[in-house]
Amino acid sequence: MQQGEKLEFRCPKEIHNGYAKFVCLNEFCTNSRIFCFECIKKGDHNTHIKDQYEIDKLFQFFDSQKKKTEELIQKLQLIIVAITNQFSQLEQRLKIKCCFSTAEVSKFDTQRLNQALNQMIKYNDITKNILQDINQSSNALFDQINKYTNEFTLDETDKQNQAYLKIQQVNELFEQGQKLYEIEKYQEAIEYFDKALQINPNDCQSLHSASKCLTMIKNYKDAIIKADKILQIDQNNPQYLCIKAEILRCQQRYEEAILYSDKALSINSKHLFSINNKADCLKMLKKYEDAIFWADEALQIEQKNLFPLTVKSQSLKMIGQYNDAIIWANKVLFINEDDINSLITKIECLIKIGKYNDAFRCLNTALQLYPENLTLKQLNIQLLTIQNQNNQANQSLQQIEKNLIAPFFQLIKNKK
Ligand SMILES: [Zn+2]
Ligand SMILES: [Zn+2]
Image (cartoon, rainbow, N blue to C red; front, side, top):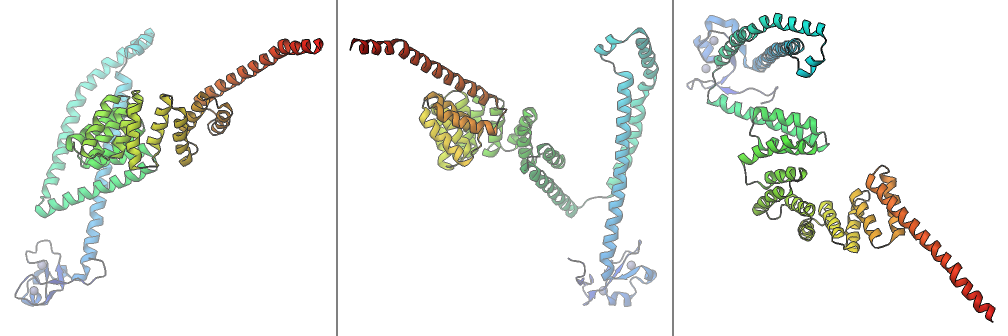
């Protein structure tokens, strides 16, 4: 219902035919809160006329109630923040005054050691009561909050509302995280996914995206914890199996990664990410023919996917099919001319088949894009060495000509 719309409710008394036009906000009233003109005539709310309003005022009432409650929540939250801040101050001071590592102590001089010991003995007396005292106050605070919480007993409708509210909150947090993920702000995105998971620790979409973000920032340990958690909830979702495979691949645990990719592919044989993952793992395990097979499978699903194109060209290079490797590297470069891996593959293959001029041309383009790339620098040295050797070879060939062949011709000439 929108503000400004006419509020129309029937009078709850069935014998009254009219619409309820009034509302009673008296604290102690036991009659129906909304009522019709006939109810007034019957004198239902006669004892507290000043608390009666026209029903159109209802929106204002709900609005002001909402504002009051939100203000209250804000003030309560400030109390918690103040407690947390104070607590971290206490924590810091405890660490400064009472926590010394062996390394630190061994660097103390006599005076500093004396001072530290005096402090420790003095503070021992204080620290022994901290836990007990704070625990007591904390229990009292907890009881107080609990008492008020229980005042608001929830019926079935409220519980449904609460569940709905939770889902909505989780989805909103997930959407915000997802937006950050898409613009590669992984750390910030994780914060949103974690907030969603605080509300619902089993929210698979948040677990999945958090795991992907953690993989992107190379925090594989936490990424795998999240991935395992989703697989406990749903072990038959190719996407979830695939993220686990992906993390294992990043950790260079290729055999295990293939197991998870295979599981995903047993559920959906066309799951592109799992096929790509498997192809790359096989390449890393030096099973180049198998890698090419799976790269081809991926390319049947998506012809212009850079990942299998790259796996295929690199694998072809590794089994010595340099001309084919160049063809497939060119396919990548046709889609993305800056692709460093394919530039490197192409240069290496051109060198292998002795097309040094083409290799030089390609290398110069690559070095303009990535002047600091180590592999490119090494390839440059390699090419220059080859060129020098060739020049030297040419020179020596010329020398040979000069020393041997020329006198020979001279000899013939002289004989004539
Ligand atoms: Zn009535
Ligand atoms: Zn009343």
